[in-house]
Length: 149
Ligand code: NI
Image (cartoon, rainbow, N blue to C red; front, side, top):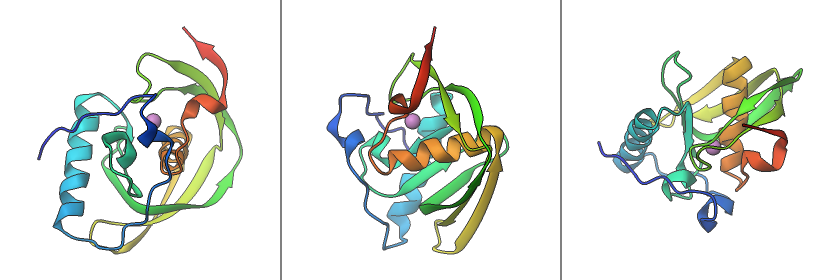
């Protein structure tokens, strides 16, 4: 396992769409492990592959309730709304108020290529939405309604 460099705003890679993972190999496992270590080290609750310079549809999340690994995730349901503070490891020091669904369901694959479904509310729903948007080259900044000090 190894830490990877986190790309920050201004790096073009963060604005690109990621490709689906087709091969579920050892390299994918290493990427997921490295992403998780990197996220933990930086006290983040989520990290998407483009944030470490890899244009693949891969996400890790841990809001303090255990590790979630998502490969080729797709948002399949959402309900309600919530407003709350959001930040991003690629935009250090910046926090803003963002509206997100209260509850979402995501379908994805695990590192072995098995289909999984994750349903999250509150912070987990927020993290899922935030990370999935990274895979389409979007940063939370464009959704901020009010920047916080
Ligand atoms: Ni982010």
